Length: 348
Image (tube, rainbow, N blue to C red; front, side):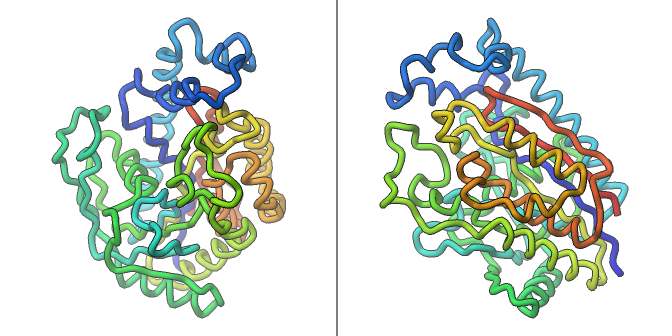
């Protein structure tokens, strides 16, 4: 039986920006003409949110948020290096990047030979002050990817796969994961298989996988078909763990996403995430209560702005299959930085 490592991380885009830009999303929502007037003023916000905003409009909180996230990424990298995988499978979402109107697969294994990307090409700046033309290159593992797809097809999952990109070199869910696991720029030598999950479902094309704000939100008629159900993602994760166990490779399974997103949480006017909803699933994860995860309805996921957690549903399924609970688990709460973040380690 092959050895398998499980990791849960985030791909929070604003970690790649300067601290002073980390409140960019909430500032955009505060300027949204659809936001109720009272919510434009911190005095009306929940107390933890006001405290995080502080007297400097989140600058000090951004520094603390970065420190907490980077510390967890460094821990995850040490665990990954100690394990030394033959291949890294990353569950991530595509937000109208590689997959657009021509095809939106529920799941797709990107069986690339190699990945080459210039992530800063269209960015004004980045935290590392790397030039716009900086190229990052990662190895793929087509043989392992084909074996994974074949195994999952045999188990009844009608899986898509691709040998080359369609519209984008690599969606930021995957690219940021690799960049942040190499935050100190030591290089990342492990072959990578990106495993796309259509987390954004009803909003992936309707709002291009991101926020349009309250005033420009798509109508019900404009929304797309839904994402795969949480139970289906969970079961896919279980099958992936079985396939990895049968393989000849040491496999790291990584789920990458933040948890509830403010810009998807309409019950909070897109202003802050669903902290209680995230806390409940976090406690279930810590306890190894995977039935709670699998039984979570898609409607509840969407109501809480937790769409990207379908990536973690795959990881939860894999760890349930392997009968593992996290050896380490950290909840990083945030009200003004769009999302809560969770890191988890499931040692081999």
